[in-house]
Image 1: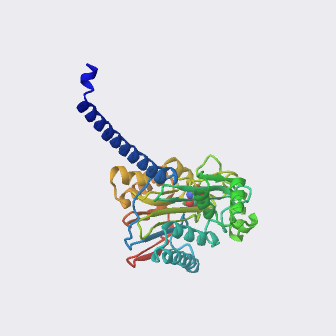
Image 2 (image 1 turned 90 degrees about the horizontal axis):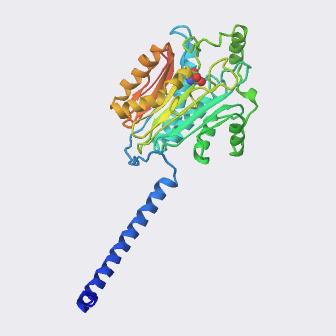
Length: 365
Ligand code: ASP
């Protein structure tokens, strides 16, 4: 039997089958190893959440910015004050647009815009931040890259001059998403960012407002009234020429907040969100409601799962969902095609946009 099986002819065909079988196996094995290493290079190393092949140069870009929702009704603010706000919003748009028009990234554009607004004492972020119950500034900021799904944030920082830049470094240089308090300040220092004395953030106007608040602080069990005062959180969202989306937000929070309170601005999915498949969002308003309703992610989810256009989804959240809970605020958003939304349910929202089409606007009411 054995000898029958092992005739020279059979032995030859077996050995040729065996050698072609091993060649085939070797090729399959090599292919598997190659695809595994490509997969490792693409996903494991970059630690990305979503890989969106958006790097096609469309030549189209969009930038939307805000300087906070709330504020007095039209006619209460002096014309000079209004002009000062509008001029600064225009300047911020100019800085961000210059980056996008030259083919820069949406991440650089939103960081640059927010840095400018953090340095401007008119807005509640960086210099000019509102003060907490102890008369101190505690700063929150975040940034998100819609291309990679990576995000970074700082919360309760007390001496970082530009918190949004610290947030970007958390995203790029650590394997965390959020650092808080002294840890955030120490990290920023280590990264070479500019630190300032905590009094740098306090402007005479904010101190005055804080003294008023201190004289008759509202009950802690009542919601903040963001619709009565202008709070001036700042944010920016952008679509760059390669189709990549980014969002950033920075704030001092709410006047008289408890020490250690963290709002929605540094919370990814609440105050800030970006996803190349859907949109980039920056919110402003009573942070507690924005956290509970996961506002920024909710907008992206309505677009992703329901196929809702950006404007419709944004209005649904701000004018119905949030408004029905008697929460005040607004948001800015841009989608992957450059469509924008800027709804607010307060008297005003300091805002503006600029597009590669040449359209642009700054507005308060
Ligand atoms: N959302 C900010 C916070 O709750 C405040 C604001 O946007 O005015 O911290």
